[in-house]
Length: 276
Ligand code: PXL
Image (cartoon, rainbow, N blue to C red; front, side):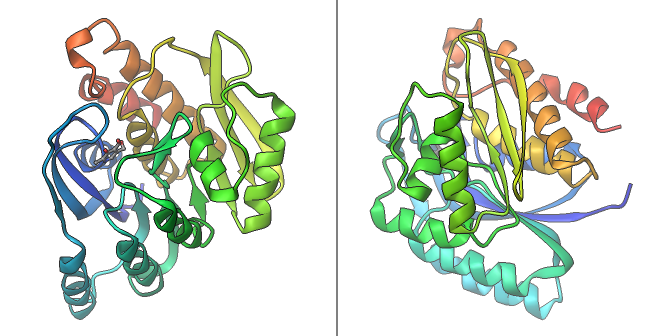
């Protein structure tokens, strides 16, 4: 296996098992050199906690990337998650242009919304900026809500394959290349991931755990990136990430005190095994 260097840009939620505290261990477990750029530091994530602290690191970013350029540090992949401000999106677009090795892969998880709603920190201006980033990336990993915000498609919690196909067509028309659309469920007992590569659509279906869990989008995206950069196809990486995420949820679901994230760490050996 070649030793790849991936930069991931997302926040540090000190407590709460999401964003960088999930991405760094999962990408490292996948055997990747993982370089981090924290977009913000929060005491906890924003989904379910109140009174959290936020330190936006936007103004530190240009000096950090300028230093990397001076040191000739560059990356095989850049993967972005939760970003702290619209300005940061411009900085990330600059990183895509200036910090990549020859075959740079850019992966954007437009982490900004779920269940039909934007996360508290975001507004319409952020969505507009996120469109410019998402549609310039090689791979995007939206959930259905995020895909709706990116395209203006009407959000529905009940839908059929025709609705999803229309959503995918709008993503393609807007410039999306490879789309990993998460949380697509056509039955009560199963859910899955649609993988769209150019115009080629496939669906990875797996069992559904009847309970929403925080942080699973970040676990999923990080596991996808880890598997993909290990040379798996987009479809195989989507499946490996789905099976890993389901096991993380199963490992957590019986513990109501652990409502804020999933216990992903004990399942890492399973994930590593799937990469062989
Ligand atoms: O998991 C996505 C995420 C990342 N970072 C912060 C969040 C959330 C989801 O709510 O609040 C700060």
